[in-house]
Image (cartoon, rainbow, N blue to C red; front, top):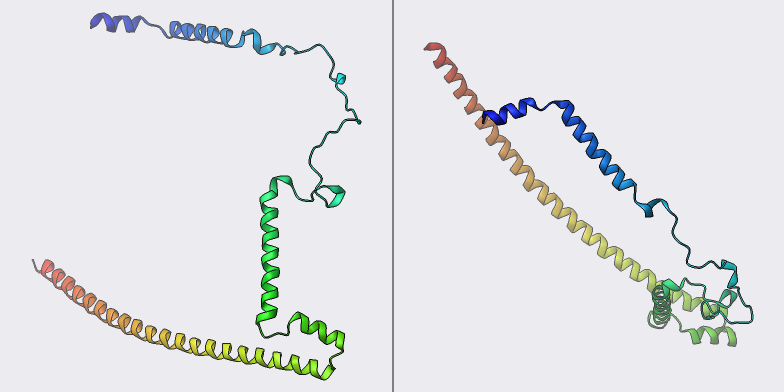
Length: 197
């Protein structure tokens, strides 16, 4: 053990620094001295890049013509799925509008065409329009009445809940005040007992 301690005492910081610097020097010369790092990559051919030219007589189709502006698709080719989804959505909306016209008690498209072709009188058109407006107003009135009734029910529920929570809060406050008074009297009694002793 004494030999190891004496050996450690003989090691000088200058020797450690010298060994450290030599190690870094060797590392740097090996890492930075590689041949392939500083040299440019070899060229595959000695021919110039101008040997291959565009020939206008050949056909180079980049994408197939699909109509639209400049005879190509106006949509990004990467978005093909979204184009189909948009077309499906527009078709569904169109069908929904047609169904609404036919089912909502509104005159059908054929009747509108007939009215304007046959020259249905203005009074009759106004009468049809008045009936449609009257039924729509009745539906709106029913909706308002239902909404008002539901609003009143919500207000009643909220006031009942508020009254219940208020009584609970008052009861808890009373209990807390009683406990605080009891603790204060106990502390005062303990203080009196300590001073008497």
